[in-house]
Length: 340
Image (cartoon, rainbow, N blue to C red; front, side, top):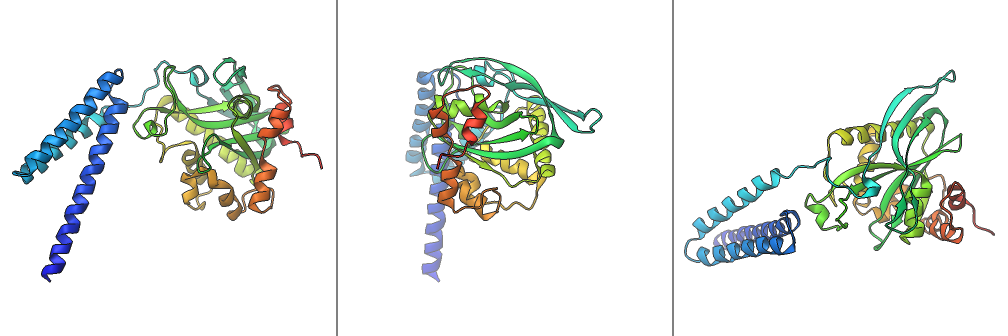
């Protein structure tokens, strides 16, 4: 019995030490990414925190309970400071996320269609991965004429992570792509680590495919894949409206991006669950690069192929680069069947 008690006590202390270590590292990173100012000021803040922790470790040798109390008070102060960091709508945004999409929903003309008018649809003409001729448009879409819904995955570095976009096609030839992105300021660069620490707001972007997909396939050199979804028109229309309602809400009430829990894929999954609550949660929602196998298991794609063949058929980057245009033909080019 004494041995069991000793082991349990040791495990409990080890757990406490692990939690304290994680809290210490998290706080150091939070200070680095969220203290206003240049690198020197942020470095000083992290240095002072480390000195504080080292001092507590020395103090704990003689006064462990008092040291633990001081540590908890320090964490409480950090937590109170953390709660003061709120998302905003009025920062000096990068040009491509300077506006976010909003929409209004109304009835169509004599045909009785349900028409959605989107404002701030992005239709940039990119000349490099950073430079573009800006153009924001107002467009209308009849949801009763949706002809297809495509999931696009764009990879930029690792197999496990991909940016996720959803594109809708209409009978009149229009297409619009929704993307949930970080809303960078002009001076910011994306960092997945910074994304854990309230560094970016979420932005709902609606764009022409010759803007938002061309940027990835041709300007950034990413590997992009387009998967037609087996989504009935009524469900596709519901998903479109869910995007619009979420975008309208975020345009009024900002929200922070989070690398793990509130990113381009998890937001889409949350929206899809509003349309179809039975969609199961899966680890591939977090590691979005592996979504193709998840789509196959859910029988969610139009193409009924093995995973390797499905990925090959879905690849669009090579086709986009072989015919480098960001005009109206871009959508046709990326959907063209390869020559036999």
